[in-house]
Length: 192
Image (cartoon, rainbow, N blue to C red; front, side):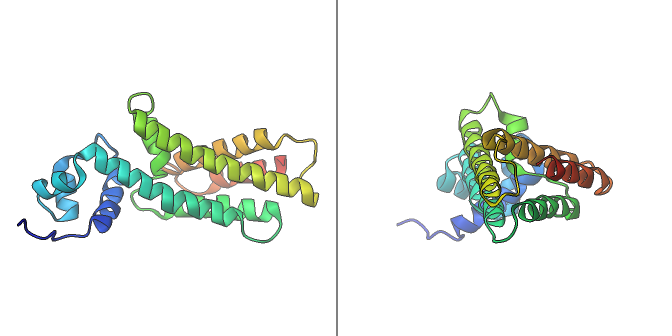
């Protein structure tokens, strides 16, 4: 009979997510994971199979927490443009407050692995699709309430907003302050 597991795999995935988010996939060694999770390499591989399998679980965990939180912010009550501005400003504030300036793990994974890692690419694409759909739905709601002109294409505006978020999250990684990011938010809101 084997020894009982000495760690919680769910907690380990959360800890691994933090490491991958900070260092990227290629920049994270198995030893980094072992150190962060406080387990031996044998336990790491016996539980998760491989570094890549653990990365997939970590990326899914990110999707389930971060992407869902963004959608929930967009779905709160109130005027559409106010909710959108509040959401974009929250992302900027969160990114600028992060001492490691990690940005968005999904955007980072896309930049690092798109085209070379089919599973990671698919996971990120589904996350981006979900976010874009939430933006499109918000635009359609704004059209119904009269906040956004009815002749505007909700799908195109949803894509614009998704790319705005990607750009904000990347720019925040190197920004000295919020000024440029605030200008982008102002321009996007005014363009609606």
